Length: 143
View 1 (cartoon, rainbow, N blue to C red):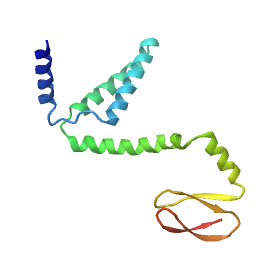
View 2: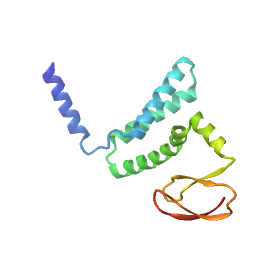
View 3: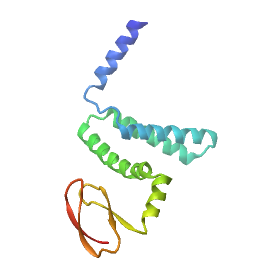
View 4: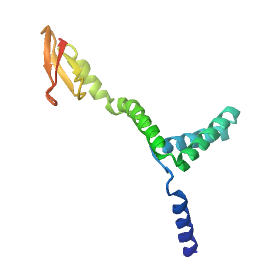
């Protein structure tokens, strides 16, 4: 039995050489497929069935693709969009929100255009040049 599994593993590794394999986008597509499939199983819906089937076929296509550079570029674009969506939720907390509202009367909070560092500027100082403490980039803002 162990010999059979090692031969199977070897054949699979030979088959997958030169193919793209798994990445973050494929994992999200597979999870989406399973969620849609389970929903469709409990509440039958033809549209969900077709959508889940298309997701599974596209995921298998990406895994078995030999065009590695194109699949890599797709994953890079997905990662960028994923960071934008999940970044909002990672920064969100009620304590931070409460703190920001309590400081809003006395301070403006800006982000550095270069490094995205949050900078707190006192209100009522007019037009000022702000120097980022992290990257030393200077930009003009109204306080």
